[in-house]
Length: 261
Image: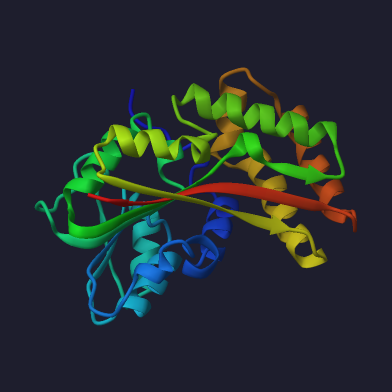
């Protein structure tokens, strides 16, 4: 079974990806960067984090790779300061010891074999370099106020992701994966996205209200008989209700690793 990206590349998904920066999504890596390093950004999507990394390590080389041609094309058009290419994380087209830093954000959770991907990332990382990964943990997400619609949304998302043989709770699993991949040194940390003020709630609730009805997640949920359009409409409404509540608060926990070959 080939890997299936649970979210797909609907506009509501890319809206989320374009929000990501090195500062809000790769802070655990930033102290290890310096000018002149060569960086590979695996699963780069539309390239916003990649572009930030390129600015931080210039004049070093930064290459963003993704297995989906559409976001790679967007990244090339929008971020000329970095290189972008289509590539497979299980078979990266680079010699051993090619990069000082290999980075992946929200990638391992969508793979059927994250250990194999980490082994490949280790292969292309130079001795003394760092492989840095960060993944959300859906099972650890928390929100207020409580709402049965959001409870059902989380249950449904995890059903769809697990049906893809993926790992929606990857954040808590990164350390054993890295150890199984053969890293000599593994350093762990954690951080959280939090959405609480009016603008944040409107953005986060709005993109999930759209995603739960229109993205590949919705298509898979209906196609597999896990949900139906009427229920997805109710889940979208639950997200809107949460976003409209001035007491609304949502936390997304992430596991983080810095691994040294």
